[in-house]
Image (cartoon, rainbow, N blue to C red; front, top):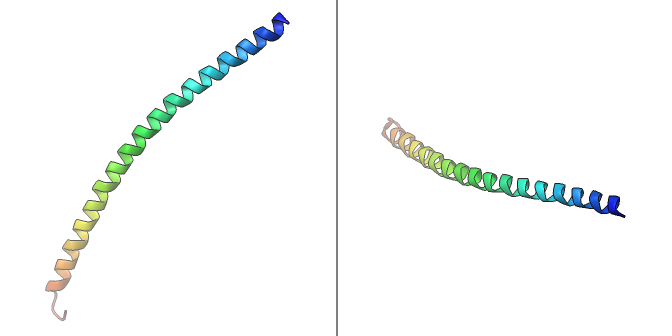
Length: 64
């Protein structure tokens, strides 16, 4: 009986360790997602500015 309880205790400790590791990874991933969303917004703004610039140049071309 003691051996079985010891085994269960070890398994529980391993499970708690894995749970804590997953929580930490989740926090890190949430931070990374936020960073990537901000970068995506910044790059989308640059693309929009480039599109506007190209459109303005195209409007100045003869034959338009």
